[in-house]
Image 1 (cartoon, rainbow, N blue to C red):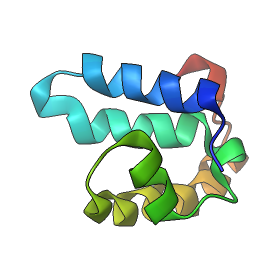
Image 2: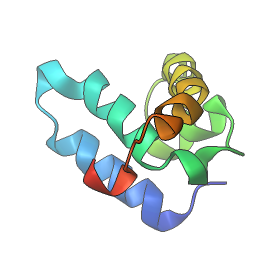
Image 3: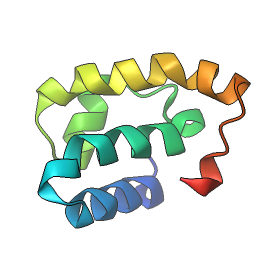
Length: 79
């Protein structure tokens, strides 16, 4: 389950994203909170954020590459 704090932060970031950068911002937010989202399903994430269920695929893709990016030096706080 998503914490209220993370849910609110992701919603805010998506609402402030430029129209042509919405999906990119979604990807960044998933990577930013990757540790906290490990036990969340794509469906649960989409429902909590209030986005289409089809974005669950994007959610899962980002979570799959998260460990590789961390190993390469990703610093979530800089996102």
